[in-house]
Image 1: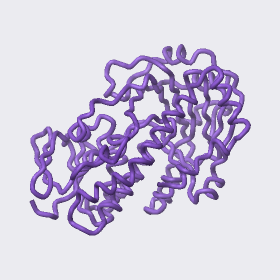
Image 2: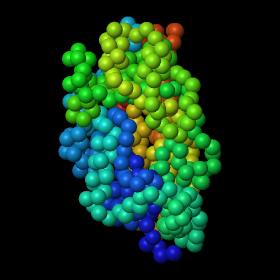
Image 3: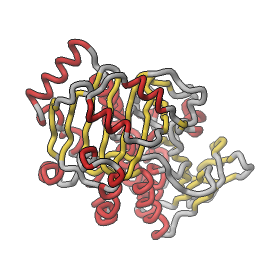
Image 4: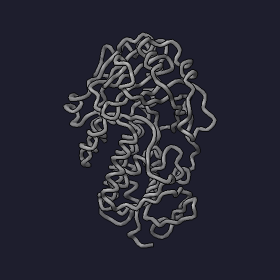
Length: 393
C-alpha cells in the first residue's frame, strides 16, 4: 500500500466533520465515509462552553458562529416545584472576561453546517455517501476498510466518529452495546414569538426537581427556545432509534406537580420528541481510544450523559487533538494515534464522570436535594463555575 494513503474517518456528524477539516488543514490526507445519502444533522439545541468557542475562534469560525448562535448572559437554577431561584452563574461578558471566549447555545444543525461549509470550502476531503462501515483488515502499512455496500477503501488509519452505536468501536473493542441510563429526554424547539412574552427567555434556566429536571435556552440568534425535560422511565423498544414520537400525556404524568411558570411553559409546547439516554462507563485508559491504526472520537469513544453539556464539546476537542497529533513528523501513524489517545482519555473520563454526578445532583431527593439548594444559594458562582473545564484541555 502506498504510504500516502489517506486517513479514513467513519461518520459525518459534528465530530467527524471537525476532525476531517482540521486534519486536512494540518496537511493530513483525509477521506470520509457517511452511511446517510446526504451529510446533515438533526436534533435540537446544544450548549458550547468557552473551551469550545475558543477553538472555533482559533479556527476562524467566530464570525460564522455569531450569525447563528445565541449568547446567554446567565445560567439560573430554579426549583421545579416552588419556582424559587437557588443559584446563578453570570455568562455573557463575564465569561469572555474569565476565559477569553463566550458561552454559546446553538442548534445542532447550525453547528454541523459550520463545519460542513468549512470542509466544502477547503475542498480537499472526498466524502463517500451511502457507505456504512463494516470491517477493517490490517495490511503491511495500513488498513483495508470494507463497507456494507461491497466497497473497499485503503487507508493509512481509521478513525471511528460514528456515534454512540459505533460499528468501528464494536470491531475495535468488542465491549458490547451502550447501557440505558433509565432516563428519558423529551425535547422540543419552539419559536419564541409564538410564546407569551412572560415565557420567552434569552438565558439558560435549569429547573430541578426530585427525579427530574428541565433545561431551557435560546438558539438561532435567540429566535427559538430549546427545551429538554429529563425524567426517569422505562426504555422504549428500539434504543438505537434516538428520536421517537412522544406522548405529551406521558410527559405530563412524569412531571407531576410543578410550579405555575414551568407548567405554563410545558403546556405551550405543541409537540415533543423522545430521546432515550444511553451512555458507557467512563474511559479507563488510552487503549479505549486508540489501538494500532484505529482510533475513536466523540461519542464513539466516550459517550456521556448530557448533564454537563459537553458531548459535542469533547468531540470538537478530540478533533483538535487528533489533527495536532497526526501533523507531527514521522510516517508511522500508530504512535501518533497513541499520543492522541493519551492526550484525551483522562479529560474525557473526567467529563463523563462529572456529567454522571450532575445527573444525580439534578435529580436528588430528600436531604441531598436540600443540601444542593442550600449550597448553590450560599456559594453561587463559586460552585457553578468550572475553570477546570472552560479553560480548555
